[in-house]
Length: 248
Image 1 (cartoon, rainbow, N blue to C red):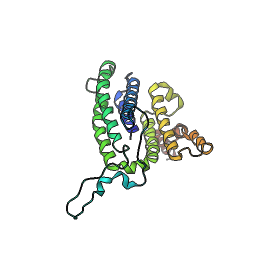
Image 2 (tube, rainbow, N blue to C red):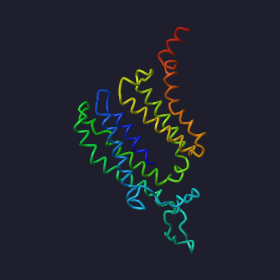
Image 3 (tube, helix red, strand yellow):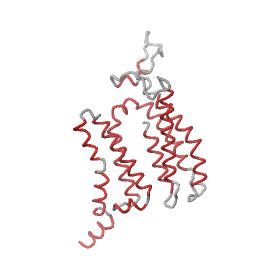
């Protein structure tokens, strides 16, 4: 949940930056700075204060995330709202992190975009910021409702979503060969960021319990991109239509 704002920032920056804009890379780096600073500040403020460590209650079962559903009703009529966060601070720390992300974004990004986004129209410059004002409330509701489910399923969600978004991006950017990646620097930034997500998902699933068995799995990180580049030319729609036309 901490990585999702950064991924979504990068996605919408790339989506709205335009092909002629040279500001996308700086905006990507600014988004990384915002989320990193927000994460550090959030950790420093949580218990124990001033440390990057977290003192947390151990999660034993899914119901630990939803203690509000287990408020007692002694007379079966009146509900006593006395439960607390059993997984503290794993549930509420995400909301604090989102608040800092939002504050830092509103302080840093508008000034940066106004100065460097010269390749975009006046109405398009701030669209990536407007998008964040939409997805932050959505992420907040997602964490509030599905925090427990995400705690157990996030490695698989990260792997699937990173694979899908990488394929969609490379297809939309018409990347078919290795040289297409080298033409624009921000394509390499997007590729490496997806590789980091792949690696994080693999590490989260394996937990690196047995290093000699789990570390070689990281060699699979570039595999989806390589597979796409090697097979894209065979699935080009115009080529398929041309071959089917020649067959007739």
